[in-house]
Image (cartoon, rainbow, N blue to C red; front, side, top):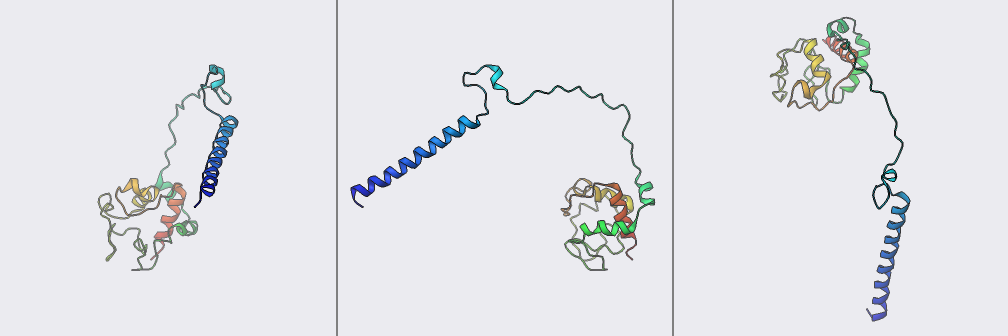
Length: 173
């Protein structure tokens, strides 16, 4: 490479650097959001200050919903739709394990009662049998109910959804 070509390459890099630095400077001028730089305290704030009254704390306790009451009026047909979230990992047929154990006769079954499925051991530490109440607690938040469980599902937040899916699973015989 001769001297003129080398000078052109260096000039190109210097020109690109100059354009980049000018772009950074222009962006800083246009979109500056920080305080300081010799401006008074009034200029350091951005946005509007909105005063809000502090809400009085509720003196009434939140109404505790009894799962047994909700479960007594659960709809298995709605639970079948909710079970759609579970189908990726759980099968309904007897002995048909997927990523998770099969759900055939799960209500009333021993927690680690599926032969041939490798349970994590965290479940048997919190419950012996999959009663509707135990299923409700587990389905609400599996990781909180049984720390260390292999189940990666975040849980069903609505108590009605949990009651409906448990009612549906109770029909799978």
